[in-house]
Amino acid sequence: MIVSVVAGNPKPASRTLTAAGLLATSLTGSAPDHVIDVVELGAGLLNWSNASVSHAVDTVAGSDLVVFASPTFKATYTGLLKLFLDHFSTGDGLQDVTAVPLMLGAGPAHYLAPELLLKPVLVELGATVPAAGLYIVDKLHDDAEAFAPWIDRWGSIVLSSASTPVTAGD
Image (cartoon, rainbow, N blue to C red; front, top):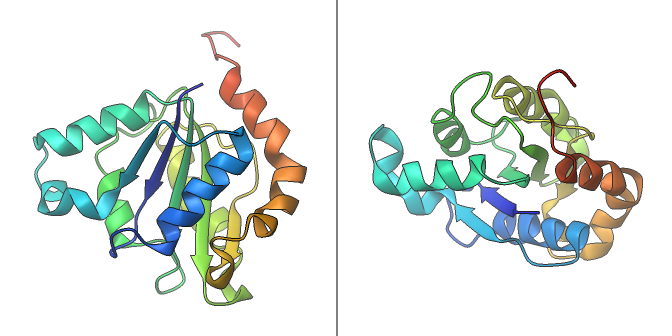
């Protein structure tokens, strides 16, 4: 299984990136194969033929399981993550990818943001999102115990989805 992490925080090496990596590692038992800190793609995100962005898009599209992570800005995911997601074609850009929407925030006020805002975009791009989105208070970004209830509830479903190839007619 190929596992990737995508962090859409405007700050490099952010708590969001740490949390996404920790979730992927806690879920699968090993570090992710690929880590994409979207901010490192910089202005290339505005160039539809940028080689670095194309490589990142191909890496994500070729993954079996991807944690898409963002801090909560203005009650939703970041524009930076949206710019990256705009590079995937609607309907099939994330076909055969099992996605986990993860968002961090200062408090519980926006705990539904990953489910109501990020998950629908991932589904629109063709991802399979078999579990509820996960919201973590950013103070707990590096605490594996904060992820445990979600993993206990959804982990086997997510892993099963990522390990089971979907074929036409299923």
